[in-house]
Amino acid sequence: MTRTVVESKTKTAVLGFDEPFCVIGERINPTGRKKLAAELEAGDFSTVEKDALAQVAAGATVLDINAGVVYNSNPNPNETEPPLMRKIVELVQGLVDVPLCIDSSVPGALEAGLEAAEGRPLLNSVTGEEERLELVLPLVKKYNVPVVAISNDDTGISEDPDVRFAVAKTIVERAADHGIPAHDIVVDPLVMPIGAMATAGQQVFALVRRLREELGVNTTCGASNISFGLPNRHGINNAFLPMAMGAGMTSAIMNPVALPVTQKKIAEKKAAVAAAGIILPEGMDDETFVQMFGLGSTKPRSGKEMEAIRAANLLTNNDAHGGEWIRFNKSPDEAAAGGAAGGRRGGGRRRRA
Image (tube, rainbow, N blue to C red; front, side):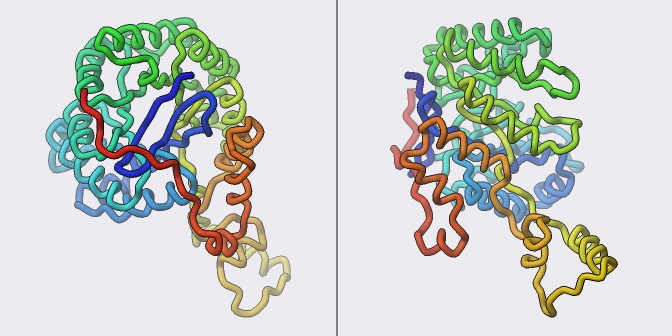
């Protein structure tokens, strides 16, 4: 049975067809986050610290680390990204003990992250593009790490699932030429937005089955891509993830955290409540208020997608005796009294080729 092993200094995450679904937290990524990008250029890592802790608390098994900031002071990522990647990796692994996923399009940043990471990180990513294969596969072999393989090549991203499968097969074959086993290839078959392609869900489910049955590889995806541009994205994601798991997908790069309710939304709701003539108890705090009116929470917590994943793990017998489901559904006070759930323990330093 295919097993992809990812390690921190003290903890192991395993991707496999008979393993619990692996959640790779995506929040430490400045792409599309102007505030975070500005903070990183200024040397402020406070948001990185908060995101690392919140994602692990919400159930992330691995954390993706992306340092792709284009500095205003220096627009050359080949110069700025490697030292930033090293800094973030060192910072995050000093805060949390889960394995890391080193994520960059800059080869120098990939190697800087690999050098700084303790254990055996996941590398994100290689594609079927010839230049990328020649740059990344030697790093994968040198550091003996697993790698995410994205199913596009020099012709771009095909809408034909057969073409995407063929690209994945080529990457697996090229990796074998470097002595990299198929169990260390985690294929991203590329999830298309369902709003733009009505068959996107059917395509990815069929692709995942083929990748499992014909190539014997584990799979991942950018989970939120499926709902891009549509209302109630969480509702779509909540249905998509268990269906993908049922097809054989073993991990996803996603946000496990439900973001806190903003003060603006709280103020708007309080105004609406007052306009309706509802009198609230004197001194009610914001957390009690948002809980009462179903707005969520003022604190980061596990998102609805995590609930769907945990339920699917239970239903596929990948949650021994329902322990994780029970812990997830305890009140915060009960969880604190019972202690934090321990992770799978594993080996320490990275194994070199």
